[in-house]
Length: 136
Image 1: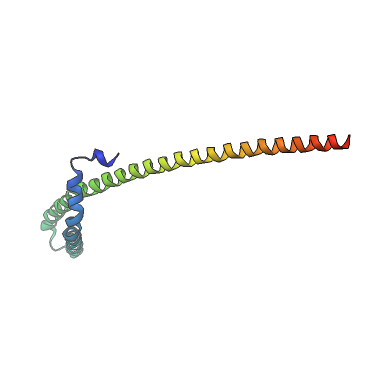
Image 2: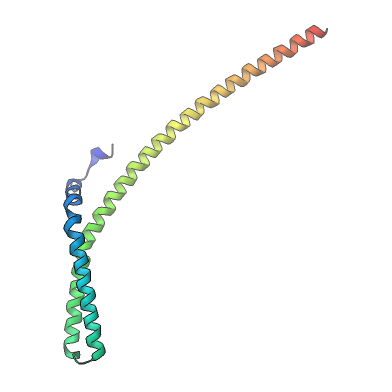
């Protein structure tokens, strides 16, 4: 039922799931490595304190790069969260169906046990009655 109500972005997300990890993971790792090296370079410049007038512009540009990195990652994270929530809803529906079937099976077992108890009660009552009649 849930699969019939696919969003318009679902085929795009499925297509991206196939080709996106190949280059995105490598690209993001390279970008992280680049940012880490750059930040290390900025710290070294600040510690040496010989390039203070260029340090502010470098930090502003570094902030821009980090903002662009966050802008690239945000839609990917949101798509993966949406896909995960769709899977969770489907799992919840399946769990509910299993629980309903189990409840019906338990009710059937309870009915059979009650029927057996009544038969056993009748049998015991008749047996006891016949024993009492035999004693008299």
